[in-house]
Image (cartoon, rainbow, N blue to C red):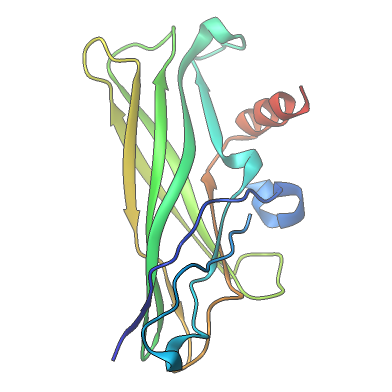
Length: 189
């Protein structure tokens, strides 16, 4: 019998510097309504966090460095979902909402972004696993902003009746060193 926690809440951002390995390449508390079955009351979804320094990406045309050279920008703005416990672990049904914006130097009507989902064990800084994904966003004629939803289902293998509430799922854009430096400079302002 599968058990479900429907409460994936609002994001609170975590610092990249505290996450070690992610710097090279938030957590949210879940609460709300009580499960109908008291036996499942202690089982909860893992904590979800959008890594602050990796929450946005700005793409420049080749050789460009100022805002007139921006081809597109994107931000992970929110998430929602739930988790389902099974006999072999917990599956997190995660929806990421990405806001993309056309830049003044954009040619064409499409932008592509890379992002990641990492899973960290309780009390460990470095992720136990990390998967990268790519998404393309098409800008309809005359529209400069688009919101998309990415549907993901990372799974944490756990023994039966083990609780995933202390695990963390971290999300962010997969940035180049230049993009990361740009984000860090923007945060300092």
